[in-house]
Length: 255
Ligand code: PGA
Image 1 (spheres, rainbow, N blue to C red):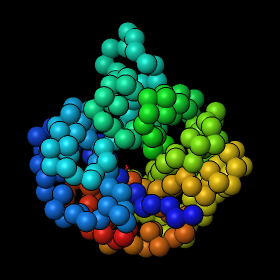
Image 2 (image 1 turned 60 degrees about the vertical axis):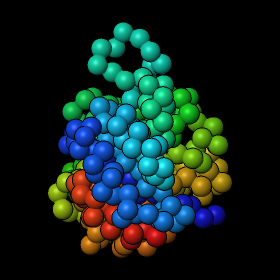
Image 3 (image 1 turned 45 degrees about the vertical axis):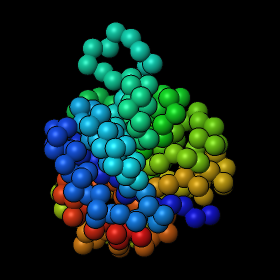
Image 4 (image 1 turned 180 degrees about the vertical axis):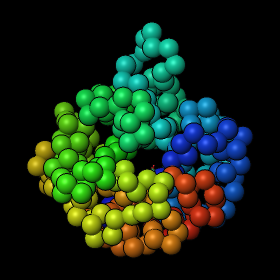
């Protein structure tokens, strides 16, 4: 099965809605014609989703749109939170769920990640579920069991069809924003193990179909090395997604 490459830009808390719209307008001509080979997604902060969605629609751009988090309840008295259908209403295709920054600073756990994954699917969107180990876990040689547990708990309770469309981003925490990365082979080893975990949970077709991204200091200079690995189906990009040319160069490497 040919999995379509996905390069997703996580803009974190960096862009106003106007800056985000400009970034999309700068990006669009640089990635024109890429769509058949690689899916490109942008994930602005909540406040930038409406403007991004409007630019994508008015300019007829073949860019996918993602949010960076979601609440798991359909609605309710949750001041400051955003419900899944609010994101679907803005034509979001994806929701990043369980990013390590959400886990570290906002208390996300495998259990709440699982609820968010469920809620995202229920609203007709696809989760980009993040996992990845700390440096201490890596040095203790416990990466594999740690990440497997994150996947087993975070992706529990899906149908095989949902699991086949799920996107998982493997992001070693020590590689995020640091300029350090695992070797492509080491990243692929973890991605292969994630795929095997999905296979054990939901069967070989789901494992073959689900897309697994690498994330953590992906740059134009190193992207191709990761993309040449068999179990890496694209990237979740932070810092290098904030500049149109570097993000386009990463997408180019995925073609
Ligand atoms: P980075 O961030 O590319 O800046 O390392 C990746 C991420 O946090 O998704």
